[in-house]
Image (cartoon, rainbow, N blue to C red):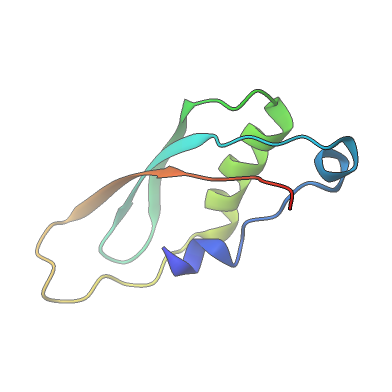
Length: 86
């Protein structure tokens, strides 16, 4: 999931307002790395953070190709996307 972290962007407006949350997204991609589906499984308290988590998936596609030793044709993951101010 390192690939996704390069596309996680904390919205400037959310930072300015001190908004925090951890939306959970579900996504599926194929062996070639093409994003097949994605959706919000659990929303955060703030829609702007939910949208940012979904946008991260769209921006990260295509994903790196899957190694040959992984035999499935599609891969599905659930991922919490933490937006926390330090």
